[in-house]
Image 1 (cartoon, helix red, strand yellow):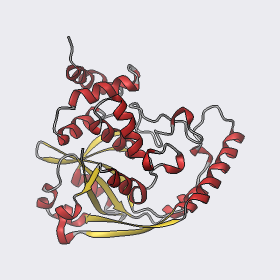
Image 2: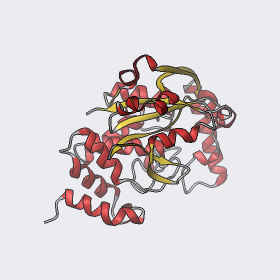
Image 3: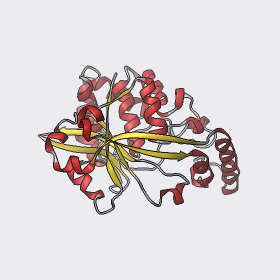
Length: 302
């Protein structure tokens, strides 16, 4: 009889290289197998295993929504065939923290929504304003940045203009397949009205380890635990003109140690898939742009 752990190994070896085992199994079947396969591991090993199984999964911006009952976005509440950087982290975290399928469904809603209220306007859209503080309150994450960098730690501050962000939303945010273009515009008007009524600006801050310290100090990099959550802290001069607000977290993923090398494991819009990139190499790609200030490091905790 094949055990769940053997099933996972089989999936890794045979289905993932051909892009996605999600073509062959339902999301629930996949979740059940993945949870069972690593539930007895220490948490860092669970993170490495679960995130690794999903390597090479194709990239899709906005992969998750509020499911079939969603008023504005009916993309699935969870899936394994596509990810963006946040939904990849959401899914891995839920798998790591869950005891079974029911718990997984509950955990992913807690991770993605304020007080697990499945609604577009309650979704954790902004990492530093929503995702981090809400998941810290959930008890799912704890900060390691100061512990790693000490006095080298710096703080990034931003004014998140949620109201303006809602105003800048376009019809492609309405993910309901059966609506006509005119109906999507009408639904978008409703969403803007709802969001602009609920939210105003919010001052946020996030601690980070400066990128130049990380690149020149291997001992500092060695203090980053495998399985850590990494938030890439920075700024984009033109972001406000595109989405209506500045942001101070530009990307997210995991830090993974493998054979003495530190990697960023993430869903990449550029590579169009989930992949590992050597940590120093990834940081260096930002140097010509001047947009990356550093990284904020957090631990997932059960």
